[in-house]
Image (cartoon, rainbow, N blue to C red; front, side, top):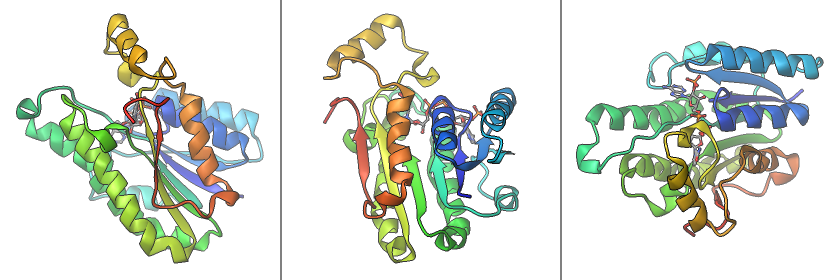
Length: 241
Ligand SMILES: NC(=O)c1ccc[n+]([C@@H]2O[C@H](COP(=O)([O-])OP(=O)(O)OC[C@H]3O[C@@H](n4cnc5c(N)ncnc54)[C@H](OP(=O)(O)O)[C@@H]3O)[C@@H](O)[C@H]2O)c1
């Protein structure tokens, strides 16, 4: 049986990844931070639908990079890790609170990277070890009002480019799936007119569905995807590229 750890499985994109991987026969470690109800319901739903697979839940705050054994002690076999957690902060960079910058860097870069150091040996034991980060188009092109977030996402692309070279011979691939605008709660703060204005700029003419992001994670986890590593795949409907 193949096992994947989904960090941020309680998020909109994370939940879809969980559903799609479960359908593909994966057993899952489902990480969440605060949304206990969502993760419990998701685990129950998947367990009922896929009785022969296992779905275990894990709570952890990724702004804490010092107690990672609370995650690693709960993992047995491991073939893939997907990082689908994240938050942003809208303001001019000159007004970005230091605490918010630190939170974004810790939960999206520092803690995930330190966790990977601890998981490398387990992933090496898999015939097809996989690491996928959900990045952002802003990590490639940068965005005003989200300079801190753009920096964090760009760091992930730099990381996969470098780390993939160290672990390729261990059979592990490392990639970023970088969405443009996705129809999730992260964008609920925008008014309908603001969302329509963004959609009008996207060549495909609309925000992505979560399944259109998850599809690429699923594909990267396929055994046939051994030869694609160190890449950032921009899944943007043609937006900003
Ligand atoms: N939505 C978009 O338009 C869009 C575009 C480009 C990239 N992305 C990226 O896609 C990823 C998922 O986004 P989404 O739209 O699915 O967001 P979402 O629904 O808001 O989910 C966010 C996830 O992050 C987790 N999280 C938040 N704070 C955390 C912390 N301190 N420690 C650990 N986990 C924490 C949440 O856990 P709990 O809910 O359990 O607290 C949740 O699972 C993010 O990396 C985001 O940057 C999104």
